[in-house]
Image 1 (tube, rainbow, N blue to C red):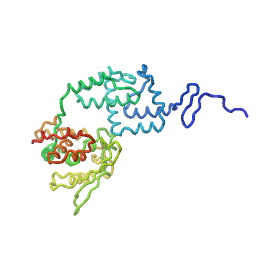
Image 2 (tube, helix red, strand yellow):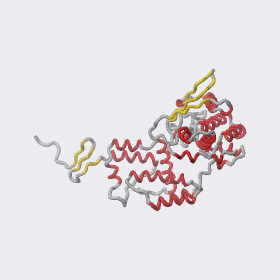
Image 3 (cartoon, one colour):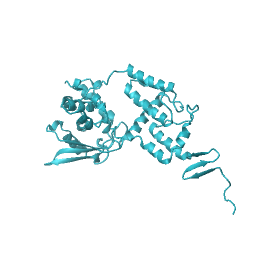
Image 4 (cartoon, rainbow, N blue to C red):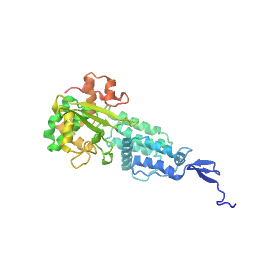
Length: 366
């Protein structure tokens, strides 16, 4: 019988291309592109280009080409949605700094200049480290090690920047003043109802503001949703609320975290009553928990703007009280009331002793 195909030195078996001439087993280009696509999602519009002068014996495309389809999927799942969005913002910042065609890995000198650009633009040392981590992640995926020069420039930012986090805690007494100041600071009634609920919930549930409001519309699905909230009633009055938190910073295993808040005896400062009143007023049954009347998710910028105005109105320095001050204040007040560090760590969903930086007992003076 005549052969239907001529002899060949390459054959594909179970998706793996075998090359007898080069004595190689490799993945086809389409699978390599899957890995690159995962990285593109993380860094936005940044374009991958061939590295003209590889710094190692293994070319990055060869390195990625040996990943199986399952390995590509696991690589993509290694980062949470929030982390991918954060890394994308970092890459967009880099593109603002350097819009010209750039090869990977980024040279240590260019990366050092980017760090200097961020520092001169007013970014804190911790924020700069976070942005550099996004670029470092891609470098490590491509088999590149961190640069000694870059590490030292980042270290210089920490030595040259502020010695400590200047944000002050919004404790219970300050929170009470903020709620009382809303009618004067925010003329719109619906906005006042909305902001009061956000302020009280962020404090009492130890929430990061980014867990309830969005920094961009594409993150609407990552914040707490309306269906994640349920109330318990006593004599037709909300007695408690249960909130399911699906996405948060330390949730690497994507577990559900349940927050259970009981109604306060002080109705004016009760997060349960404020949240119920907000939902009854706005009336939505799906989508993000906090949204405007038209269904658009509440933005981080909107809350920050009104927090700034309200803090200023009650006579405090708005530069020292930010969205994260609710969380800092919750940890500070819990410590002042005698809760153990371990208990505070669990309530705030901290996985390490980072909680210690949030307890500011020396600031607990009104």
